Image (cartoon, rainbow, N blue to C red; front, side, top):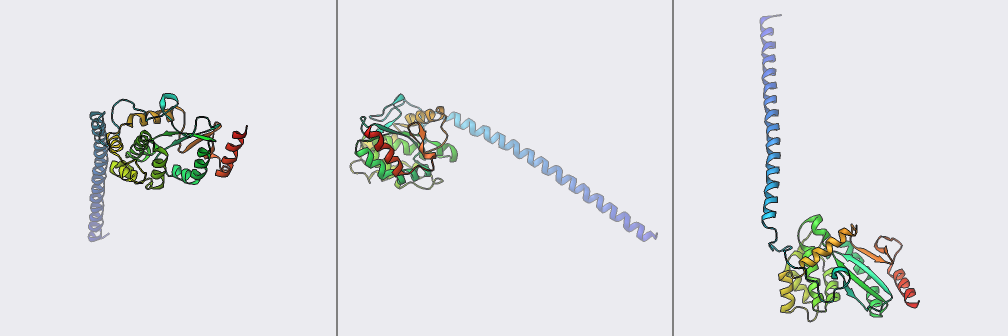
Length: 258
C-alpha cells in the first residue's frame, strides 16, 4: 500500500471518528432538551394547579362558590328538575341535557313538535336536568352559562321558549359562544318579555351556577355518561334506534288511555 493511500484511509477514519463524536454530542444535547422540556411541563402544570387553587371560589366568568339556588318551581330530589307540563299527566319524560351538546340539539329539533303537542294536551310531563358535560370535555364555560341562563328564564316563567331558542341558535360544539353572557342576553330578546333587568342580573351574577354544578354531580352519581339521556319508562330512548317521534307519541297516548 502506498503511503498516499495509507494516509488517505487514516484521514477518512479520523473524519468518521470526529463525525461519530459530533453525533453522540448531538444526541446528548437532544436528550438533555427532552428532559428539560419535561421538567418545564411538570413545573408548568404545577403552576397551573397552583393558580387554579388560588382562584378557587372566584368568579372568572365560570362557576363560583356560593349557595345552591334552585330556579323557581324546580322539583324532584334536591329540586334539580325543571318541570314542563301538568303534574296530572300520566307519562313523564326525564331529560338530561347540555345546552352546548349537538346531539341534544338534534333530539330537541326532531322531537320538539311532538313534545309540545303532548305537553300542551296534558298527556306528557317533562323533567329537564341540566349538565355541563361539554365544558369538561372541551373546556370553556358555555354549558354552565347556558344552563344558568335557562334556569334564569325558568324564574321568569319562560323556560320552554328560551330553552328552544338556545337550541335553535346553538353554536358549533367547539365554539364556546354561550360562555358570553351578553350573547345569552341578546338571544333572550327572541322571547317576549324575557329580556328584563331581573333576567340580566340573574345571568350576569351566575345565580344558579352552584345549582347547575349540583345537577351535574347528580348526573355523574347516577352513572350516566352521555347527553342527551332521555328516560321514558326507565329506558333511555335516545339510544333506541327504532324510536321516532311518532312512536313516542303512540306510547304516551296509549298510557294516557289507561
